[in-house]
Image (cartoon, rainbow, N blue to C red; front, side, top):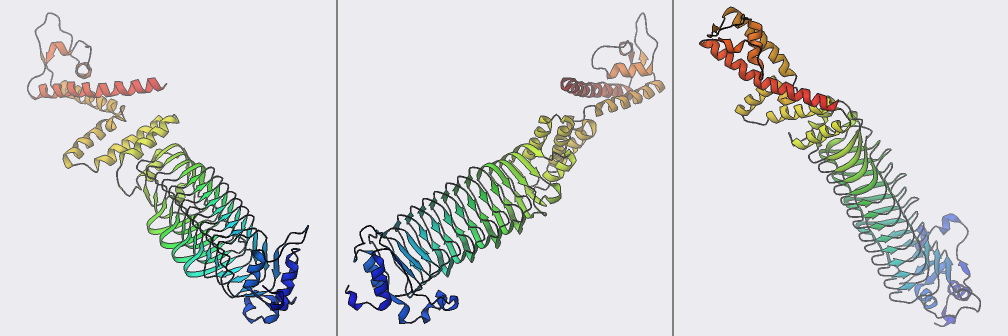
Length: 539
């Protein structure tokens, strides 16, 4: 390129390149220098893209002892800056510039790239390799930012970036690799889908205060995302559309504290099969209008939903199906509006609050070691009976086992008795009748000392009957005097004798009464003995 053909601003840039000096074409007036008005800038601020290209690919040798660089502020870049497959060994730093056409860096090998507070109708950097930082802070990019397959060895800084592509991908970051942190914070906004599926971040991923909008689909699509440290979607983070983290892995913790998610009638947060090495915080003002799902997720520490607001009427508002977590803090700010599905989850400590229990639950297969607060059996039975699937035996067994592990055997028996009663409601009329008698007589075996009351009643009944109708005496040399009380007691006792029964034999209907007392005494006596044995073994 002949230097004589360059315009004054281009010649200034050309001369500054060898020493890496900056060229500022701005006026010093913030209003006039706003790149939002770049289309109105005149020839005194125009630089052809081919001039930038020539400098970046080696048209000018650096000065000895200096680091060459393209450093330009306040310029309007006209034409197409096409660096596809180029080898660029010098830094590119453009600040407050306006691009007529989208730059193309696809499969380029770049040094550090700074496009700060610029206006671009798109940026294509698919497959690019940046040996340093990619700094886009404060820029406005319409038409899509393409970073799919790119590899950035330093930081990707998109703080305050505005991405606009409502009908497509605002950010295409499939399989993007960033060795350090990714910043999408401080007013970062995206109208269109932000895609990071299969991306790898070697540091932290920060979406603090970000505002994402894609109502018809996914606001953030980050399935299989791999982040070595923490993920922050908090401090004013909002998303209209699905936040999809399915199969993602987080090496630190995931913070959604105070986040506002909205995807009514559909999934607001999809964290199915998510793996987090420490904690997940969907707490302290976290709000989701749409389903929140952690199905199959594995969380080494705590999943906190303290102070959250969850709404997805009439569907599932919260799914913890098959979740594995050390602790779940299920204490939202208000009642969960929709179904809360905890089926087949494995939780060491479940902390909840009866004031905010979902009116509809799914608890079959739920496994836990500790409930906080434990509450009484009556209160916890109200929790179990909210199951939308109706009677399921496993929740009762699990709750009874928990009470027994705490030494609250009476509470455990109350749960098992409730289980038998609730099961009876699902049976045929004949089995209901049998179950009713079992319940009345001995509380399905969980109220064994109720049998002692029945024994007392039978003893009184027999005493009255046989006082009025003395049994016939059997032939014997020595006959004890008849005593209706001891005779009835002799009939009731399954073993041993009190010296009454062998010498007297009732006739007719009274023989049937005696036989009934004998059989009842055998059954009820064994029930009382079993209950006493359990009581003594606990002591």
